[in-house]
Every structure is written in C-alpha cells, then in structure tokens.
Amino acid sequence: MTLKTLSIDPLLPPAEAAGLRSRIRAAGPYGLYVSAPIEEGLGAGLTRRHDAALAWFERQLAAGSLEPLDVQAARSNLFRGTWIERGEARLEGAAEVAAHPELASAAQELMGAALVEPYMLYANLLLPGQELPVHHDTPEFVGLDKTNTPEWFLVVCGHSGLFEDRRIRVASAVIFLAGDGDLLTFPDGIDAPPVPVSPRPNTAIVLDADELVHGVVRVGGPSQAAPPVEIGMELGWSEEGAWILRRDTEEVARYAPGEVRLSMQWKAWVFADAAERDRVRSGVAPLTLPGATRALTEELARRGLLPEEELDGTDLALLLMRSFIDLPRG
Ligand SMILES: [Fe+2]
Image 1: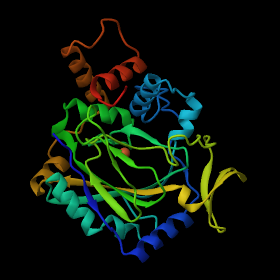
Image 2 (image 1 turned 90 degrees about the horizontal axis):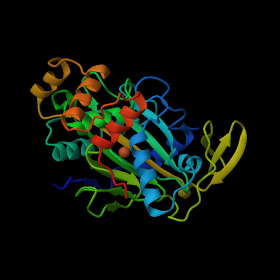
Image 3 (image 1 turned 90 degrees about the vertical axis):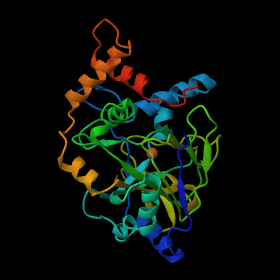
Image 4 (image 1 turned 180 degrees about the horizontal axis):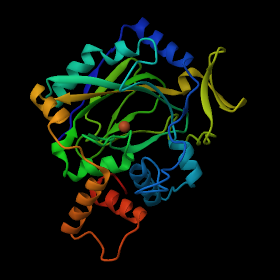
C-alpha cells in the first residue's frame, strides 16, 4: 500500500509568508528539543525518541560511518518553538496558520475525515550539519499522549495494532519556510527507495506522519560537519540579520538566514464523522500505561518473542521497540 501525501504550493500569499518568517525569527531564542533522558519508569535512561535513535545508530554501523554519541546528539537535537499546543496561540498569526482552510481540506482528503480539529503548531529549526533521523510521529490514544507517556512507547502502541479502538487519528503537515534539507519519505515502505520532498519556502506537505516513515536529510549536504550543539544552548535571531548559537551569553556560532532550516509542523485530530468523534471523546475507557504495557507483553509472549528470564524495564523497552517498530536499519 502506498501512503499518499498532498502538497500545497504556495501556502500563503508571499507577504504573509515573509511576515510569518520574521515573527518566528523575532520570537526566539529557541531551546533544544531534547534536554534530558527519561528519568523514571519504563525505559528510564532512554531518550524520548529512542526508537529512531537506535535505528539511526544501526544504519550508521551498517554503513561503517558510526559517529560518537555526542556527535549524533549534536546532529539530531534540533531547536523548537511551540506556538500552539492544545491551547492559546503564542505567536501572532499562528491561529490563522493553524486554521488555514487548505491544510484542513487536504487533511480531509488524505485521511478520509469529515472533521479536522487543528491542535498543534510548532517550529523546528535545524542548523547546518543537523538532520532528523527517519521516524514515525507519535500517535495519540484516549488516555495516553506525549504529555503523559514517553514518545517511543506511543509509537510502539501505534504499531502494535492492539489499541486501535482508542486511537485518535492525527493528520500532519510540514510548512517549509527557509533553508535546505529534503524531507525524506518512504511511501512504499522501508524496503522501497525513499522519496525526497524539496523544502521550497512557503509550500506545505500534508501527510499521515504517524504511519509514513519520514526524516530530514543533513542540512548543508552529506559532508557537512556536526554543529557545536550542546545541552543548554539556545538559538536566537540577531538584529544584524543572522542566527546566533549561544551558551548563556557567549556566542558559539553564527549562521546566515538561509543556512538554518526553518519549518512549521501542524497537527490536527481527524474524525470520520461526529459519531466517531463522540465515541473517541467519551465512549471508550482510557488506555493506561500499565494496561498498555501488560497487553504489549502478552502480545510479545503470544508471538514467541518474550524470553523466559525476567526483563528489567530498559530491556523490555528495547524489546518492545525492536518487535513492533519497523524502521530502516541497514
Ligand atoms: Fe516527524
């Protein structure tokens, strides 16, 4: 089965796109996406997207180009600004972008959904030498979403197929605003050649990012060195017209506007109709972390994948990722 995408070109009138880009620049500085590992519970010590990081590590190993962990972290830890997350818009014009009728109609067409409810809009900023290892986005369930559950666990839940009765379907869009670095998609599965999407400014692609494997190729080209990114740094716009990477007040590096890849991610809950929305919103028992873990462990046993010895939380987490999440590994 081919997973389709839809593109919108252009998304905004040119002056509006330029205004949006200026407001995003002015609204920084931006912090890093990952600031610490998960500290407790199942998978303690792992990162939020350990599933994608692990597959990336294995691909580098298979290609004989394994980089040290701190270099991998500097390459993949992007900067993020969140404008809407289940609430008020925190950037002028963000609510208008979230409610863009072409995004909604593309989501309707792509997902076969009558109802489209945008709920999230955020900005991703990648420096030269950064990339986004291929991954699925994190699905949502009644009771479990990324506000209360590690992201890798939600991806496991989604790909297990065990909780579809409590799945909240999500449509995603990427709005390209500046910089290079193709979006790589795998519409025919991870064993077929990927399809690159050029990030032309003021265009958007609408996709089912929870199902379609995707990533961002290295900004600045394959031989671009990793940027000097470390936990605690910020990226902000200077009035001189450049992006500045800072550790506290110290300038670490400086980038021209076109060197930094800037995109916005849009997400909407989608429902086939009002009956499906009402069933999902109030007609099913919420999924819980212990309940989902139990069901997943039983499924591992049913498939003959559960070893006889007792697993600790980390080993169980890694087994769940390997057993349920398909990503290119070689
Ligand atoms: Fe994604």
